[in-house]
Length: 326
Image 1 (cartoon, rainbow, N blue to C red):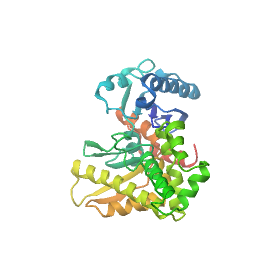
Image 2: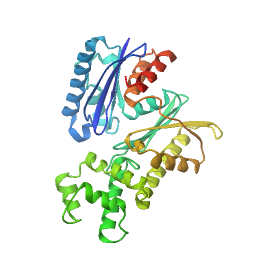
Image 3: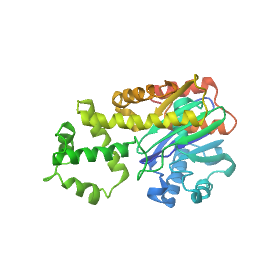
Image 4: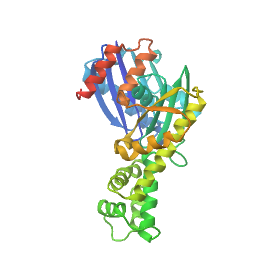
């Protein structure tokens, strides 16, 4: 059997084909499928072209795919759009052999191997998703304008605020200010407004791209930048703790928690803060390293939805193959 996983995101869409033996047959990466940003037609084109391309790379046809899971950003967040999103791949795939849902499930399935627990995503946006004894729930992820706390976009906004305060004297200038001036040379500090509003037009991805600069400054000792990551960690931990209560974990029961998304690539500056904030809360949390890449999670979940979950041997082979750069 062959399974296709599609992991949508705010900046890119990743496709992977696997078989029931745990072999990765092909991979492909394309532009974002975030339809609220690029429009439904553009998102559909990304999905359909991506399916066609990955099938070509694997030497198969869409009809050869046993089941597909498409994790789409913002799925379920606009009720009127769900029917159209559910039909997004029907021109290539049998409607009975694919399922669409929010891309948060890709991260959960990958990080926890489709087992009970909570996964928190901090990429361009942020969200947490958990499953426990057949129940499921999400927390956060209400969009960048008034939510997505702890995400790269949120960190980018906090970083821009920090730059403005350092620039006009409300805070003492530190490494982050210097790194911003080095990365975006301008004659006047206020030109950052021209960059963000006129050149970037407030683009979500471009603002999120400031998070690594804040990370670099934090790692190098900029206390104000590091404070941003502690605030981000506090918000992410709150999502996890809320899901523990929503899903009714027993008070003394260990809760497996994992993570995914680009912000966690910042390493200890976010992970140590996240662990610290979780430890302050009421749950018995056990932080686990992510088991697979989110794209593989989508394919693993496709196998589960098909009623043919991958064997332990196949899952082990997938993990080993990823480690070896398969």
